[in-house]
Structure formats: C-alpha cells, structure tokens
Image 1 (spheres, helix red, strand yellow):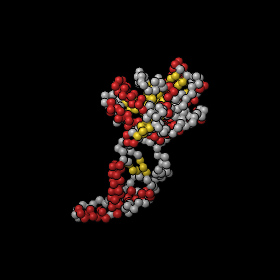
Image 2 (image 1 turned 180 degrees about the vertical axis):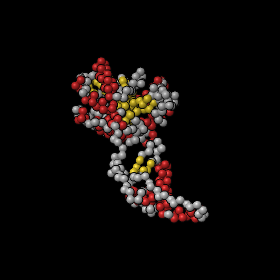
Image 3 (image 1 turned 135 degrees about the horizontal axis):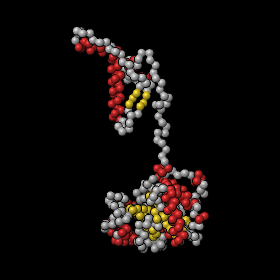
Length: 393
C-alpha cells in the first residue's frame, strides 16, 4: 500500500561544508544539531517503518491503492517527532484539500451477492405467481414403533409390529384425480442453509426433498420440511465411475466392498436422522452396475421398510422395495431456459405414459424455475404428485 501525502516534501537544504574544516565527527554532530535535519531524519524513519509494515501485511497481487491522510490528522499521533511537519512542507504552504469521506470505512464493505450465489429468490408476488399451496404439515418424526437405536444411538428405521413401514408412514398422502401425474425431487439439501430454506418454504408440498446425510442439524431440516408438507428422502453416497478422483465422502458405498461393510455404512447413514420414507442415490454410476452390491443394498432397504428413488442411474434395476427412477435430470444444463425445456419434456412424458418423474439439485435457479412451473400445472391438465406416489415394487 502506497501512502501519499498532500504535498511533495520540501527538505531544507543543508549548508555545504567548508574546505579544510575540522574532523568528520564534529561536522556530523553539527549537522545533526540542525533542527530541520533531525526532523527530516525522524520523518524519513517514520515513513520507512510505515512502508515496511505495509509490505508485510498487504496483498502483493492487489495493486497499489493510494490513501491520502491530512497532515493535521497524522500530527495528532503522540509518536510524531517535533518539527516533522515543517520538514515535509514548505514554510507557509497550505495543505492540499483532502476529498471528504476518503478515510471513512464502508458500512457495507461487500457488494450484495447475486441470487445464484446466496440462494435468495425473488418473491412470488413479483412474478405474478399464486400463493404456494403446501398443504397441512406431515406428522412429526419419529412415529412410534418405527425406529430402533442404531450406531451411536441414532434412530434406525424398522418395520412396525403391525407391518407398517417407513415408506408408508412418512410418505406424503396423495389422492389421484385421474390426470397424468408429474413429480420432481430436489436433492442436495441441508448443505446450504439459504437454498435449503428456499426449497422448503417456497416449493409446493408435493415436491419431494432429498437431504445430504452429512448436513449439520439434519434432523432439524427434515422436521422443518415435513412441517411444510414435504416428504423427505435421505441421500446415499455411492461409488461413481471416477472414484476416488470423485469421492462422495467417508461413508460412500463401494461396489467391491464386502456386504457387511456395505451394511455397516448404510446403518450409519440411516441413523443420522429419521422421518424419511426412502433413500435416494448421490452419484453411484459404478455401484448400481454391480449385482452383488445392489443385492445387498436392496436387502437392507427391504428389511428396514424403505423405498428407493434414484435419479435415473438405476432405471434398469428392479428391486423388492417400492421404487421409482427419474425420467430425466432437469438441470444438467444450468440455465432457466434449459430447465424450463426439461420440465416441459416431463409434462410430455406424463401425458404419454400417465406419470413422469424429474430429478434436480438445490440450485437457486432450479428451485425458482420449479416453483414457477408448478404454479401452472393444474391449468395445463396435470397433477403434481409426491415421488412416493410414483413408486412401485
């Protein structure tokens, strides 16, 4: 950081030494006795110290911003030596004006982030959208008789004594009206508080929400989602094709692992929270292609009474549990127009087959476009349904 004062310093000229005069020490002491020279030296020392401090603390890549300080403000410091101002300014010269407010600190030092970064979405009223119909909140988890202590004391889903399962008890109730059904799952929730809250509070209750198992306060997020009418999935990190370069975390299900290791990881993941009706995949291109790995996975889900909803990777996999696969990922291309096109394609699929399921991630633009799209579904002759309503064995 460069420090620029309001005028160039005008140093007093030293008197030239006469030829043949005394020893060097005497001359030096005589020069130092001059008040202007000593003041100049003190000022130079002050500036050198300041420059050193700036070099140590400043960002070498940030350029050289200039700060102008009024001399009267600098002179207020107790450390400034007597006579320093006279050494830097010409006698009787006026100090140049300082731009008002130059030294005032900003009350808002950071510019507002774009909506795509913060997760803040424009209010529905600015888009002429009808109010969100989320419906009544769902029953608070855990429901009696559907959990047992898991690893570390967390709740593991179990099948109730009466045969009731989590897939049934925690799914959002749904009554078909004869129209084609279309569903959307929004995943990756719980890791970003703003986008998670936006999804929970601004999307219709029929939109299914899928939460990352590593999220902080996971149970709190699931409780909030259910209170707003959303059924919930818990994401299962699975081995992708490019593992370990792409590593979904320490509890990733690995295709080549022993079955007991897969069970151990699944139990840890499932005991992170309760209130979800099934599991969803996070990545997993390699895992879902392995017969033994998927056999173990399905056996665990069946014994725990859970459904499995995937993003399309496991569409060729049948299973003994209620399940559904997404027909398309709606935000592979991250733009409003591309997402809108995928949502229209979902409508076409529902019209042709009677139902269609889309999968998306908790990007602000995805949440926003799904909200706008869902508001007009009824007028277009379709019924928005939770993902559980599309699941079958």
